[in-house]
Image (cartoon, rainbow, N blue to C red; front, side):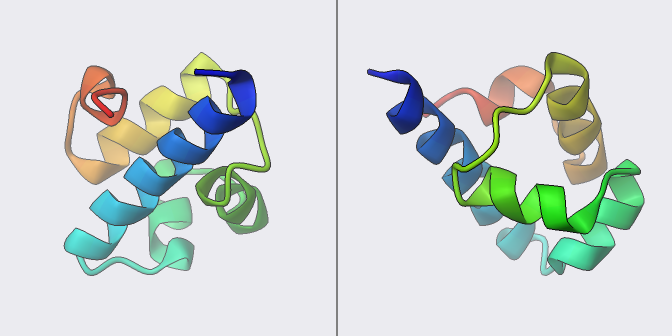
Length: 71
């Protein structure tokens, strides 16, 4: 899997879990303490989030980081 495909899959996983929890991007961004426009880029596979950013997202989604990487 190349880098672009990895970022797209990661972003889709974040978006899928967010939707399952019935959270808006704005509420997930607020809960995780990250910028909403950057979260949008992550979900679209346009940004390469740092490990700490991914950890914040996982915590806000109520899961462990490895669960976001199970795709």
